[in-house]
Every structure is written in structure tokens, then in C-alpha cells.
Length: 188
Image (tube, rainbow, N blue to C red; front, side, top):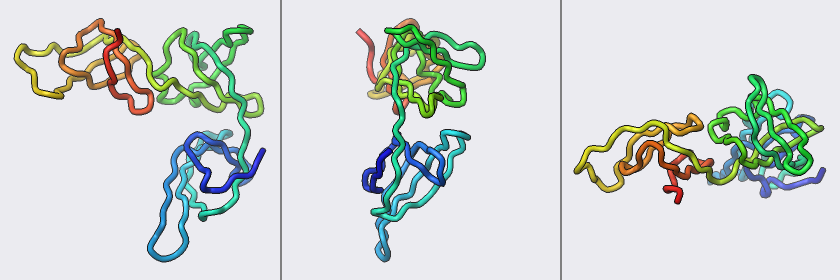
């Protein structure tokens, strides 16, 4: 464990707050006209999963937590946990639904994900920047409906709902961003 300054804060790093490990979910730098600058943060407890907000003074020292990272290939959901398999050793990792949360719509069988562990317990997952999905449902576009940039709703094979251009049809494979959940392009 090392010490970092508030200037080194970024999303996804792990710090000790009130003697408990937390992940920084969001932060913003505030420099008021009068007074000292500060960092407003949202942190998620690795033990309870509770998200809390706290304001750190600029330049304050924080203790960074080292989190172990392992690659795992998503295999299946067993009803309580998402099961990942380490491709070289075939070791299985069970990741509880609370840790995956809303990111479950970005899990595709066979894809590699980076799993994060603290005290040998899963505490997080890093998604790839984009994933390829197949459109399972979408509205038909009407001939002549060619407004530039027009979008329509689509449901993907992972259950994700996304806005896609009018020319996308059911069965097509598209790339979506895991950061924003938005359509990126057709997959060739």
C-alpha cells in the first residue's frame, strides 16, 4: 500500500477511507473563488457496497489499496454468481451479482474481462472498451425516412437497449461502448 495525493485521484482507484477499502466511483475538482480548492468524491465500499460522498482538501494524502487483477473468461450465470474461468489454469472465479451490477448487460460468453480482487475476494470488474452484440429486436424503418442522424431503439442479445441508426436491422452485429452504452458502428 502506498500514499497518494488528491491530485492523483481518478475513477477506479482504490483507497482506504475510515480504515475500510473503497473504490473511487466519481470525483470532481472544485476551485472556489475564495478559500481552498477541494475534491468532491463518490466512493463505493468494498465490504458493504454502499456508495458515499466525501470531500477531500486539495493536497491531502490518501492511502492507496493494491488490488490484484486477474483475467477471466465469462462462462455463465449460476443464479447467484457470474462464473469466470482463468484461460490458462482453468481456475473458476465466482463473482456475486452485487459486484457486476448494471454491467451484466456487457457480459458475453467467451469474452475476457479483468477481475479485481482484494483479500482474495472479488471486488470489481473491468470491461473492454467496446463489445460486439447482435440486434435481436428493432423497429422497421420506413422507406424515405432518411433524416440525417435519425436513431431508433434496438434490443441486443445481451439484453442491453441502445439507440441505433435507422439502417440497422435485426440480426446485424454492432459494436457498443461499455462506457456510455451507445452504438459505435457496424461490425464487419
